[in-house]
Length: 99
Image (tube, rainbow, N blue to C red):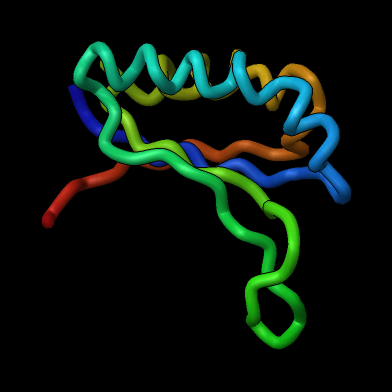
């Protein structure tokens, strides 16, 4: 297995939708953790035009092990945040852990 970084971006004003689907979203990530495949995961805080943290979230990142790029893309496409419109975009990149 190889690591892949899944970087997703929220729609504007995503807080209500995020809250509604958070348990399902986190449940899938917990499954990766239980399987020993999760390296890290978490939200990307929103920043303002001056580069300061602002209220809210602009997206998320998940770095986890998958058999291949296609499996990582399939997992990302099935995320409850993606299916239910929290994310407007998700990108999957190969990731090489150095440290």
